[in-house]
Image (cartoon, rainbow, N blue to C red; front, side, top):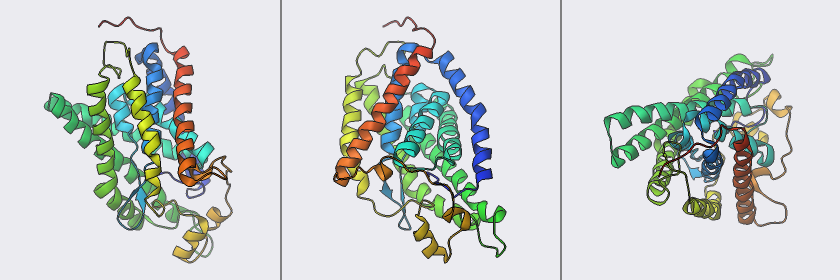
Length: 328
């Protein structure tokens, strides 16, 4: 679901970026008011779950690949606005350092995966949880809501791709950006996410929640106790980092994330806006490091991304409200 550079028109990217400004403002406001200073750094660890989950590419029907996002997971643990900030920063790091998703399309990617996904997932989770109390009910609610949240984001991504050839064409009628209309983009995106990627999102979400409920029950905003020991959570992050090369097993590109030459072969021409658009030279493109084996570059990228997220939210803890007094 990471929309690459130049697949959306500059005007589409601008609209999405402008739409995200008040959303980010509200997210910062809510996080400062709702998250105790002591627990702010823990959002960085939750954000690392999202960053790492997005590195585990899985094969989808049609020969493409996809990944989980874990946006609903963060929303369940720390609230939907915390998830908006966490996933937004994760997406920004991916775009700037690793070229995963475009810089210009960052607003659209954040709208889909950092705003719509966790908010849809969270509110559906709360609705189902109220009808199914208990630990088992919580996991059922988490599975359903995370599945729906991911597919809501996928649908929006497909629509953003699909409106491009309707709105932006050259004199010959060729698309300037993404060439596939809604009638192609929506089923192509949704088949893979409804059948496989959504299940992966539900699996990641439930597995991590189950682990936390047993190994670190105070990890989350709703717990009234301070998170005195997060060593099991750190161990889980390390295990996920070590396992990220499994994401290299899935071959092929995600739908809508092809290179310009590959797309030209598929549609018979190079969309002018896509072929001549602005490009960002990332430091570690596609999570690779020159001279290192691909698997080692993947692990190093995972370490850097996860560490940056923890550092960002550690620094942000100074802007949060003073630490609350927690009872045991």
